[in-house]
Amino acid sequence: MTDSKQPIKPRVLISKERLEARVSELAAEIQRDYVDAEGLICVGILKGSVFFMMDLLKQIDLPLAIDFFQTSSYGADTVPGEVRIRKDLDLSIRDRDVLLIEDIVDTGFTLRTIMSLLRFRGARSVKLCALLDKVDKRQAEVEIDYRGFEIENVFVVGYGLDRDEIYRNLPFIGVCD
Ligand code: IMP
Ligand code: MG
Image (cartoon, rainbow, N blue to C red; front, top):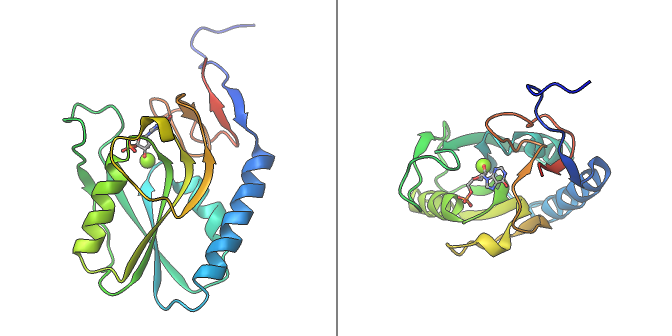
């Protein structure tokens, strides 16, 4: 039975198994790089990063704090390149090592804004871990220290990513086509 009110079922682009395997590799790399760090703060960008961030951090055996930013949403009626902070951090990041965790880098405007804000506030170091990299869409240069997957210029959903707030809880990365 088909129901026109049901959202379409996305096609799998990156399976749950591939996500799990790559997240474990990224966690191992981060663990190794931060083994001597003191006072690491992992900062997620709400809401898209939360599924990835939780899976990743559960596999990192280091003392760390977590915090969140929320920025203006994709496709909002903002000037291109203008990013609004809707929720700021609770913690001070002065003299702390900060690892930003993001679902996807698209134009790069969000990360460029957030990374310069963190540096301005006196973070000791700022690195970026992004699950997905839509490299062809980049307009602002952003260095990704830990990258999950490079993907084509398609709109993806699942594993935290939404389309009109739906699909975030899919266990895989999918495409609605
Ligand atoms: P930016 O263009 O790099 O600033 O990305 C801004 C935000 O847009 C990302 O953090 C995502 O939340 C969202 N976004 C970009 N591409 C996609 C996509 O393909 N699916 C869902 N959200 C996306
Ligand atoms: Mg996001």
